Amino acid sequence: MNSAYATDGRYIHPSILNADFMSIGAELDKISTADSVHVDVMDNHFVPNLTFGASMVEQIVERSPIPVDAHLMIADADREAPVYAEAGASSVTFHLEAAAAPVRLARELRRKNAAVGVALRPATPVEPLLDVIGEFDMLLLMTVEPGFGGQSFLESMLPKIRRARRAISEANLQVSIQVDGGVSRETIERCAEAGANVFVAGSAIYKARDAAEEIAVLRELAAGH
Image (tube, rainbow, N blue to C red; front, side):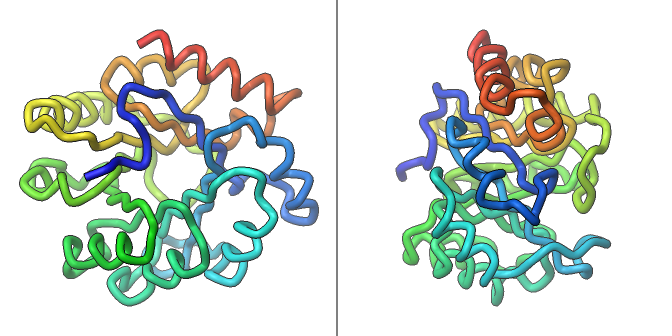
């Protein structure tokens, strides 16, 4: 199975949750040196916040200079997630907690030409997923509670990243590990050392003086591990 990202690479995905939505085109251009734009879809049911839906994602896909990585923090992923693949997202990540048949959903998304990610809240253990982890291109381990930007990084997630990476490596699988929440210059090296290779950063990039420079710094810090 081909992974969306080579596991020996380091990839930076700025989250537009921290962007100025009144100037979304310019905000996307700011991060054109990143690997993908991370688009957080929230439905005010699975998480207590509301962002936007598939039509907005489709517009972002059309305007973005880089691929779109859609992170679905939505209920009823089995029914709703395929719409985001149809909207043109290069990768679609749904939460395990919101899917009744995650393997079937992963295969459906792949048939729609999207790479597939599966996400876990901080309190959801990774171990029950490991028997089927090869069905996915990417495992997203939330390093904050999903639903709000700007939260502090949860150090307690580092052992979880290590366990997941060890299990994936022992199974000789090419599955990326993405981390999302509180990723910055202060935390990215620890995430990379633990085994993550795809890094979502929102506040760190969009609040930086120069977004492109911040992307380069984060990529360099991650590449040291």
